[in-house]
Length: 246
Image (cartoon, rainbow, N blue to C red; front, side, top):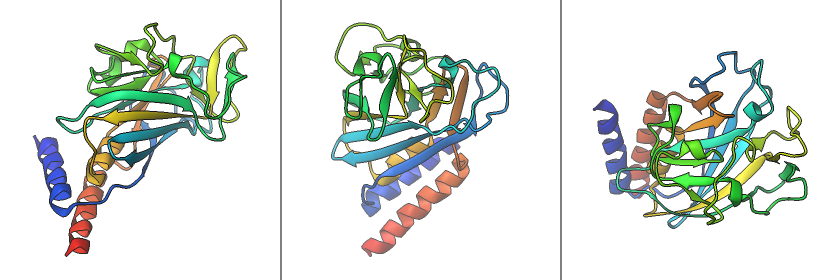
């Protein structure tokens, strides 16, 4: 109830104050569990959110400087991003999934470069994820198991995806990707169309409230700062927006 009230307050402030849209960068570094309980040892990810009208671009990067002990190559790959869009908002379409600027394909994708599509290995859904992502309504993933219901591939195809390979390694990869397996080093740019545009506060709440997955349930990370600090930031942002308008 407290979380819902905080969400409602921040959204109401955003609507009332007309807070402008802006890019958002979120680092996911806080341990959220998984099958490997060893220290994170530098495991990390970053998502950069950019809006143009109802189109939302998400640049997802593997920013790890190390991996937990006993990680296999597939465990070191960033494979999913879970989000909860505001009530009444959903992903209308997954427009594209391409290798990010300055990034490149590795393994069996070593002939692909920045701007090349990888949508045949990535899905999106509004029907929640699996395992520790069951509480997230919108999920982008290279794992079919992260779709709780209807899933759609970014390339529009009907086949399944075969994660965790197809996921995102660091640059250079911390663990060598086999030549027979696909991966990207170190970012993928996803473009989505939402059912409506988000306010800056809504975007920040969505991004900071997200979760990423490494490997097949091997480790999950959430963002820092903690949710209470994020709420304070959002409310402060909204209040400053009101002050500027006055």
